Length: 339
Image (cartoon, rainbow, N blue to C red; front, side):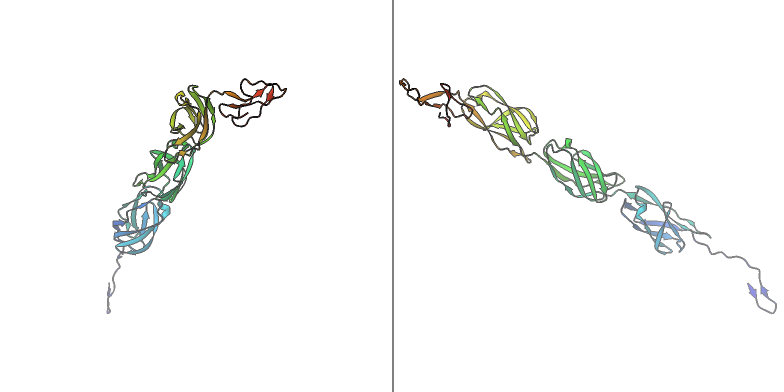
């Protein structure tokens, strides 16, 4: 204070301090984000904010992009959102005065996963391990990939793709299986499901051993070689399904009952795999043969042969490329059933 002349003068001085207020937060919006989402802009509402106010996310000061005495806009960098958990947001004003605000929780959660495609979307029974490429969003390091009810291993992962391996042991039975991704809590959850079809292969026969039997010979065990055979494969002898006694993916042992071997003829052996996939193999011929008999047609029965050389002709009761004939030490020419 100062008094004018005459006389007067200045009084002694007393200090007056202008201090920063103590900040207070009433809300932080948004109050959560998904892990790995990238930078997040938050709006902090409250009071006592000043230009020198610092915004803390956990122990890290983050940048302000706008402020008033009752509002601060700040950016949380994505590098701080890589780990699940509950983080505290606060505002701190410097001295003189100032101090720290109350804290408000900000949650970093797992996102909800979503699948847009699975490639491939099918495989054959017994095809061995299959590598899947799953495209979508919201995938995190803790995501689990399910094939049906079984978690399968991941070999690579980004937020938008997962590479996983379905072991061949899960591909032994034909059917429709569901692929999904599950993210753990906090939040997370299950994705939509995408169908994966395990199909039966188309069977192929390369040989049937033996490939013939005699009429009335009783039950005959046959070995069918080929590929694409599965546990549900059926073996047909003509139009009749016969029983299997052993099976691998490239071999079937089956029994043709003697009741099917009572009539000479050619019968078709086929293997049929059921849907999904599957189908009929090409047929393989199995012959049921009667006992072979030989007839002489020339010279006629009872004729007198007075030549040193004579022509002898005859027939077989059925045609076989495996049969020859020798007359008096001389091999005969064979054509079909004629000799």
